Image (cartoon, rainbow, N blue to C red; front, side, top):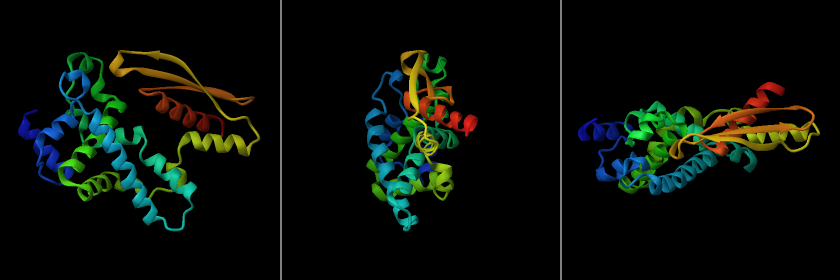
Length: 222
């Protein structure tokens, strides 16, 4: 895709004409591409995302206690959610990758997509300020923000609560396999609850694999 097409896409998804085009190019550049990549912008965008979502939830749900707000927040800023939002707006078609990363399917990696989504938030913040970043986030998270607590509750928290309520030991997570190239590792995690059972799940990050394993356990045993 040409530079002009890329910048048109940025304007479309952000609702702003990019004032600092190089920020957005960096936000979409994977480390395998051999140029300055998105990692620093990802670090910044992750913090901006958390603040914006926390502020929105605080005001949208004035009667909810801290625990429920935390469950909502954790669900809304998770890596898989960021990756899903990124997929929806076409990030996979825009990310700049090295040949090996392309061949290994990094364009479709939930982790890579989620990282780029956070880096784009960081770029919008640096280019246009906090209000523009807030609008960008709320625009693309809109359909998720009013979900019930049960819908956004983090699966690991839900599983731990279930185990406690049923007088079971705390769920145990074990890394059972790691495979794939360095830039697109796959982790397989097993979660077990004593005297109940266990399930395994694979994802691009250990935390995501644990989350998916907890979700699958809840579906199977509760």
